[in-house]
Image (tube, rainbow, N blue to C red; front, side, top):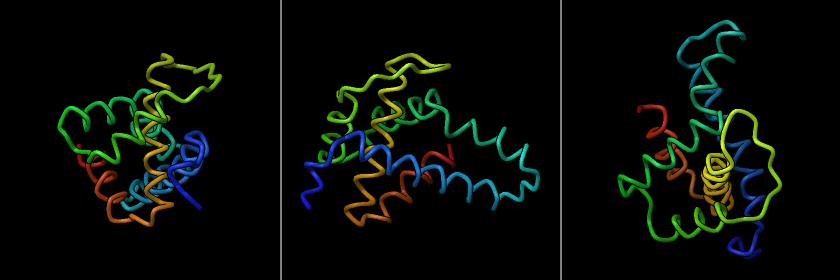
Length: 124
């Protein structure tokens, strides 16, 4: 399979699951013991607004390589029919781009790079 040809929204679908699992493990490892508290804390990481914020911050600090930026741009420009709740369409597209990048990296087997991205996000 040529991963560069996989639909960006499919990459985002996978990346969303990878991202969510990483954040859940991160919060559990912080010894948050109540599900309600876990849910409240997770919003700081998994909302489209926050994902867009993290993507912008990483882009502004030249965190990504050329290949990753290409995936981000392709995903950010992908046609979707979102009715985002609690965020703008631009924030939604940026969040989708971050998720797509993570999905792309998972399919590429670049787990170390995913960890680097997630550490950047969680250690902000």
